[in-house]
Every structure is written in C-alpha cells, then in structure tokens.
Amino acid sequence: MAFGVFIHRSDSIYEDSPAERYHFPRQYLRRVEACVGDWIVYYEPSKVAGSRGYFAVAKVEEVVPDRRTSDMYFALIQAGTYLDFPTPVPFRDAEGLLERGLLNEEGKISGRAQAAVRALSLDDFNRILARGLEDASPVLPRVGEAEMHSELRDAPAAFVFEKARERIVSLSSRLYRDRVFRKVVLQAYDSRCAISGLKLINGGGRAEVDAAHIRPVSANGPDIVSNGLALSGTAHWMFDRGVISLGDDLEILVSRQSNDPEGVRAFINRSGFALAPQRAHERPHPEFLRWHRENCFKQ
Image 1: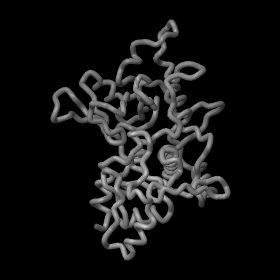
Image 2: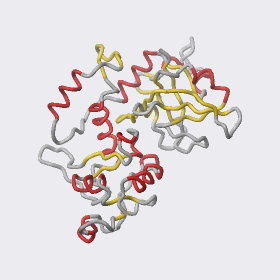
Image 3: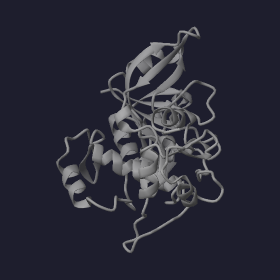
Image 4: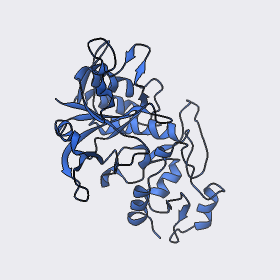
C-alpha cells in the first residue's frame, strides 16, 4: 500500500477541488502515481492563517495531464471517498509530530516536510486517521441510532489501525460516512438551520437539524462540508423537492410553483439569505449550488 500526503491551501493558486481533483506540477508526478489506487491525507500548512492541519482523507483513482498547461497534472479523486475529518489534526501535539516519518536520524524535521506531495507510512497514516476520526462528542441522527450502530459493527473493514488495540473503521460504509458528514456540517453551522436560523436542541441534547447534501450522493455529490447545509426537517424537505434553492450569494430562492410561496417566505429567516459558516472553505460552493438550481429547483 502506498499512502501519501497532499498539501492543499484553502487559498491555493492551483485548480484544486479536494473532493474531486488535486492539481500538481511534473516534479511530483512519480510520487502521486505511487498513490493511485490508495489513500492520501490532505494537509494545510501551519503558516496558513487558520490552518486545518491534516483535514481530510481521500482515495486517488488516476492521474491525467492538464491539457491546458504543460508539465501540470491532475490526481483525480475516486467518487465517494473524500471525507472531511470532524477533528482536524495538528502537525504536532504534546507527543511530537503526528507524521513521524518526517524526522531524520537526529530526530529533527527533515526537508521532506516542505514537499507538497510525500509518501506516508502505514503507522503515520493510521495515527492521523485515528485522531481525525475520533468521536469524543458524537452528533447522531435523531432516529435509527441502534440500527446504525449495528450496521457499523458489521460493516466490512476498510482500515485497521492501532489505538490501544487494533480498531476497525470502515470509510466505505454509507452509514459511517453519513455520521461523520453530519458532525462536520453541524459543527460548521453551529447546529443552526441555514434557512430558518433556528437552533433547536431536543431534551436529549441533540440538535434537531439534518446535514443535507446540496448535490446528493446519488448524483455523485461528495461528503465535503462545502456540499452540505444544516437544515431542519421542513427546510430539508423543501430543499430536496426544489421548493427552495440558493443563489451563489446564498439568497434563498422560492419556487414560483410552490402552492404557498408566502408561507414559505414566512418560514425563512428575515434576511432572506441562508446562514453561512464563518470559514470560507466551509461555505456552500457555487458549483454545488448551481447543480441544485439546474437539477432540483422548480423555478
């Protein structure tokens, strides 16, 4: 197996779209090709303001040349494999570097740390994955929890890593991915419905909002926070059925085919715009919003 680290900045000058493609120059071609068919971890450098550290995992499907720019290539990410970490992982913690393969024989950080693409050992991959996917304060769906835990327990293993003892985590389980996606999206929106602005917590301390995909999984929508919205049950129903949609500026659009447009407008928050996460990379991406307007919204 050939794991790797891809460095990505939220302000990247390259044509990256982490859930779909990674843009890189020829100097890294062999290293990226070594990762084809295997998993990589995305890392944002600590010098970037608000760095997320190691922030996601994905699987590389193939490498293709950038036909518009010589000596540039794209690593294409396999659909349905990208997953944001609910807990971004720092470059180092109290025990030292998470990516220990960067240490030289003297125990100091080697020049490899500057490489935009680098190999990652199995031990380092497992260590980062365990930290990124730890679930100290789970945010679970309101119903079906027992069934979900049962299916997770029986799901086929995708990875084995060491953390006190070997644990099995399946990144291919739809139920597991939905759980992680929900946590990431609700964190980004502070558990508030993006349409109504309401933050409702039930008696069990659980948020009464769903994590909705803007471009659904059935249409190859990725599990990335910028393809998600925190929506109440009613808002989620209206969004999925095209009663409402969002402009690129997050203006809430109401379908003229709605049987009660005034009632819908009374439901949305007074500003007429969806709430947005504070971090730019978490905001709904225009590409996903455009897909929803063109394929779901009943204008």
